[in-house]
Length: 88
Image (cartoon, rainbow, N blue to C red; front, side, top):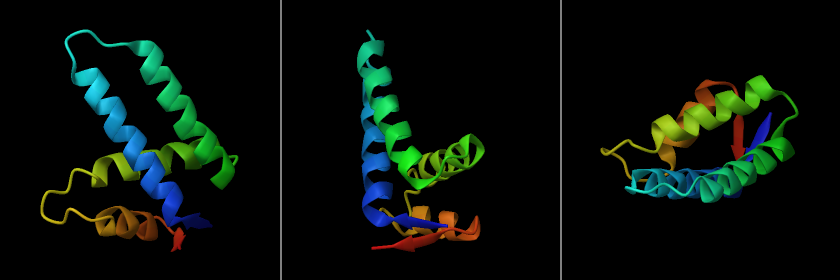
């Protein structure tokens, strides 16, 4: 299955925004729900399988915190290890 790099970047950006909103003292869950909906809309374009969507989202979320390499390489490597092909 192929995943575009721009989709990975967009999902990672939305995940960071969700993290920032949830880190506030007063969380605005309307904002969080909107961003999560945007993530799942993007994942829906990649695959219809809810299990695969969860797998992709988990991989992006876990690998974006790699402080040794602050690029998209850890995310792409994680997705490749799961059997996905990252395309530009």
